Image (cartoon, rainbow over all chains, first blue to last red; front, side, top):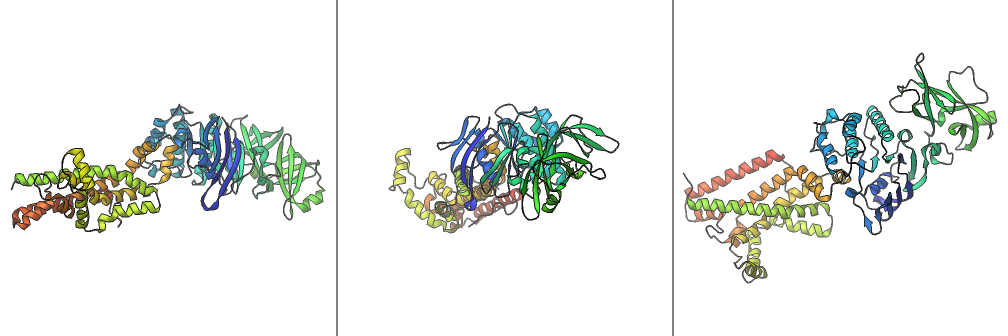
Length: 361
Length: 228
C-alpha cells in the first residue's frame, strides 16, 4: 500500500510546496529538511487536514485527493501523532484512548494489553492530560493513534518538545513499534540523528521542493546528496552484535566482517544495530596504526574524493557493501597523496559510534 | 404572605417565555456563533453588528420596529394569520420573537468567544481519529465549551426575564397571555400597589442575583464577558 503523491500546495507567506513522490508502503519514511521547508504542510496534505491546490494523492490505489474528490481525514484511516500531542483536555488518559478505540475502523495493529505495556500506559489511565509530563503525553498520543487502527501512521516531530531523556525513551519506543508492526510510518523531523535512527527511507525537502529521495543508508553516504555536505554529515553502517566484552565493558559489533567496539549495549548477541559515524570523526592512515588509542580502525577503499569548501575534502570510503564518509583537510590528502582506488585505514573515534539514543556514555 | 393567583400567572408566564426563548436562542445561536467564530469577512462583520445591535439600541426602538413588522397588515403578520389562524401582534408568540431578537447577543457572544478560543488542533486530532464534524462537535466542542453554554443559557434566560421595553411595545398587557413580570410591576407602581410591587421587584432582584452568582461561580469572571 504505497502512497503516491503529486501535489502543489501554497501556504502562508507565498510559500509553495511542489512534490511528486512514491512513498513505500512499509517501514519508516522520514521527511527531513530545515524548518520552513514544507514538511508539516506535506504531512497535513497527506492527512487531509489541508487541501492541496491541485494534484493527486493515492494510498494503495485508493484515491484520497484528485481534481474532483477529497477524502476527508475521518475517512482516511490514518493515525497522526502531533508535535504537541493534542490530547483532549477534558478526558482522562483512558478517555482519550477510548475515544480512538470507539472510532477505530478495524482492529488495532497491536493487542491492547501489549500496547499498554509497551508504552507504559496502565499507570497513567486515570489521570488528566494536564497532569502528565511531556514524555507521558507523547506516549499516550502514540497509543491513541495506534488504537484508531490506522493503515498509515504520521508523526510530526513528536520528540521536539521533549527533554533529552524523554526524547531518547520515546525514540526507543518508536523504533520498537516500527520493527514490530507492519505499519507504514511517515516521520517528519529536522533532526538528522533522529532520522538516522528510525528511518528506512528518506525524503529530503527544502524550500517546498523534493531535493532527493531514496534509502537512508545509501543517501547518507552519497557525496552528491545535500546530507553529505551538512556540518553534522554522517554515514550509517548496518551491523550486528557479535560479542560482549565484559572485562572492558564494551560490545563488539560486526560490520562487513570487521569488528567495531562500542560502549556496552544491553542487547543480545546477534541483534541488528545501526551505527552512525560522523564524517568529521573519521581520519585516514596509509598503514594500520599500532600505537594509537583509537580502537576502531577499518580497512577501506577510497571510492570518491570531493573538495567541499576551502580547506576541506570529503571522502567516500567503501567497506564491503557499505560506505563511510570522512572529512579531512586538503593538506592531509595532499600529504598522503590520496587517489581514488587507494586502500587505506579509517580511524574512528570510539565516541562517534553511538547508535541509539539512551546508550550514550 | 402567599402569592395571589394573578401573581402566580405572571411568574409562570414570565418563566415559560424565558424558557422557550432560551431554547430557541440555543438552537439558533449555536450555529450562528459557530459560523461567526470561523469566518472573517465583511458579511460576517455585518451579521456580527446586527447581532450586537440590541446591546446599544433602546429596547423601545427595537419594539417599535417589531410592532410594525408583526402588525396584522404586515407581510409577516398576514403569513402568520394564514398559517395559524391567529393574530401575531400582542400574542405570546410575538413576545417570543421579540425576546429572541433582544437577547440574541447575550447567547451568541459568549458562545462565539468560546468557539474562537477553542484550539483547532484538538478538532484536527479528532478528525484524524475518525470523528466526523458532527461527532467532533458532540464529543469535543460541546464538552470543552460546556461552561460557556451554561453561561449563555443563563444570561439569555435572565435577560429575557428582565426585559421591559420590547415587551411593552409589542406585548400589550394581557393577563395570562402577555403580562410578564416587568410589565406587571410597572402596572402595580402606576396604580400605587406598592406592597405587591415590593414583592415582585424584590423577588426579581433576588432571582437575578442568585443566577449571576451561579454564572460567576461556574465560569470565573472573564469567560463570558459580553463584547460590545
